[in-house]
Image (cartoon, rainbow, N blue to C red; front, top):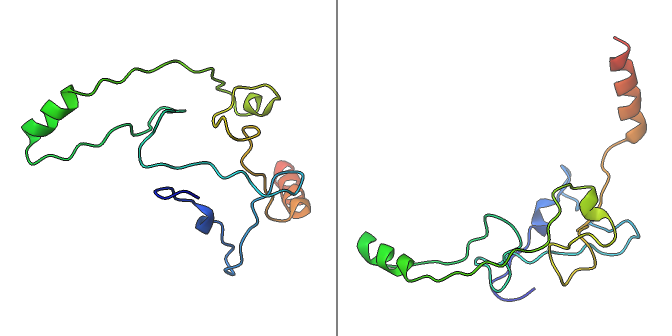
Amino acid sequence: MNPGQFSSDDNNQRPDGSKVPHQRPDGSPHSPTPHWPLAGDLSPHIGNAIAAIVAETTEQARNAAELLDIDYEPLPAVTDALAALDPGAPKVWPDLPDNLCFQKELGDRERCDDASAARASL
């Protein structure tokens, strides 16, 4: 991880405090995505912060904001989550192998299937 970058890896705890491993389907470690406070040369999705202004007054902040000259270049996009996993789909993060960060399964699939089947018969 680089200075100024943070990770959400601490948010994957089970109720007993143990960690849920983030892995790709082949068992390899997950692909952590960069989380910068401000977008650099790439703003891969809507909502990225691209500038921060610190000023003593609102007027100074407005004046500084008016000096920003931001030139967006449209990037290839995919808006369907499953289609984003297709080989050749436009990647959100160019340095990663694909759009899959990790895949994990939690719980007891058989019990869930049984409960769903029982519920469907009501």
